[in-house]
Length: 587
Image 1 (cartoon, helix red, strand yellow):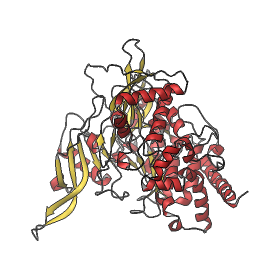
Image 2 (cartoon, one colour; image 1 turned 135 degrees about the vertical axis):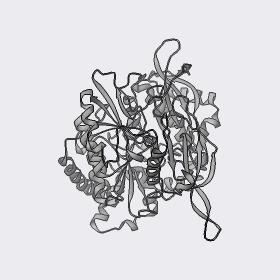
Image 3 (cartoon, rainbow, N blue to C red; image 1 turned 45 degrees about the horizontal axis):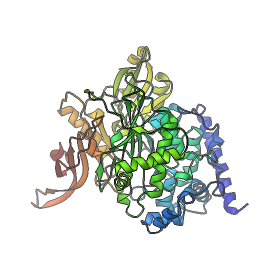
Image 4 (cartoon, rainbow, N blue to C red; image 1 turned 135 degrees about the horizontal axis):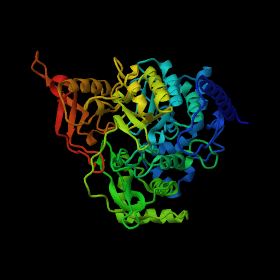
């Protein structure tokens, strides 16, 4: 056995022991919806080595490799050191730091800032050196009480300022403050709970978004849970080893987003995803299925709404997974690898042309010989439909049960708040918690007779930040990470967003919800262009009353009129520019 292999296996054993300790602190691991792929704490990729797993590069055609050689610096780095190896190298690095052989500052820059993103670790070196954001995979945004307590246990050692938990705009969870030496223990704990952080960042398929009302909606057209689980497994479950981390999709040209909607509300926001599946009845057969839209994304260089692909598929797991696999394969092998600003799917679709792209995808699907049929795009409904609200108490189709949408201001929890949510879920919703892309939560399957008690819970009253019946403004504020942790942000967003929402709530009464999105920079992780009012960090100047000179101050550009739902569209041109962020100017 090589020394490297021995270190990896020793690191794996140490981390497995630590993971077992986590498991023993709470209730046994509970699987999410869908097939249980593995059992127990040994289900993670502890013993997967580079000898057992193929590299991501090994799946690329020679022509793609040649283009990558002439590609961007990131492409050249991926060729020099395959990022899939991070699945096991993280154990080696962590063990070396714990033993004192290595300090985090000594870790090679390419690993620290780049390759570790393949295990969901994003170094926040500019704001919190040596600390990482750990991004998970939470298909369809469904978690449980045990997982929530685990997140709290993971971040608590890093202190209340840094050790926090965020809900993202992809129904996902991010833990902050994580150190490299602790990462394997957390990865193993996630795998013990049927979750993973592998392949969740940079050039990977990101968290698969579904309907937060899946299975509990009286207007549901398709239950999205099984399809989301299926696509998630396609992405990050190795079909050969049965372990998390799938090298087949370990070397994409850019990030890739998938959203699967379950109703006309489009709670998944398909219009800003690379693949969007919109439920639609077949005009001739009456069978329910999905219209496929493609290419939606928001970035610093371009914001684009998805385009109709001309394709409709059935809603079963096999059809959805096969279509996604076909698109992933073409994108992986043919996507742009030199100019990263043109690396998203939309550019490849435009290069082909929509009709030619449809032909290529159908040809690829047919080559798999799975019996999956791709039909023509079906007519959308034309009658008026108003998107429903997720916050508050709403009846479910199940007799005597309701769903309860709870505000989590700007999607951020402390460790204590996460445990409070776990307790609420255990008492009222069978331990289940649904995340939304608006960075809030839903407790499903609450008994109608228990609502009064839930409304009186201390976690939702008094000084608590969380609310079951928030106002129309504070309940609809979304925020990116902001300058507190993100080195790209021009402004602090989360603290400002929460404060400004409260201030506006006290000054303004609105007849319906007003969605306000804060984003720290033009990358627009906070999706400012999709909001009723979008606030994007930007340069601003204000006159100094003492000197009469204009001075640089934190500022923003303001977007107005973005829409979500089945008629979703983006607001692409700022309504106002260079507005100082201070209350006097912004409010």
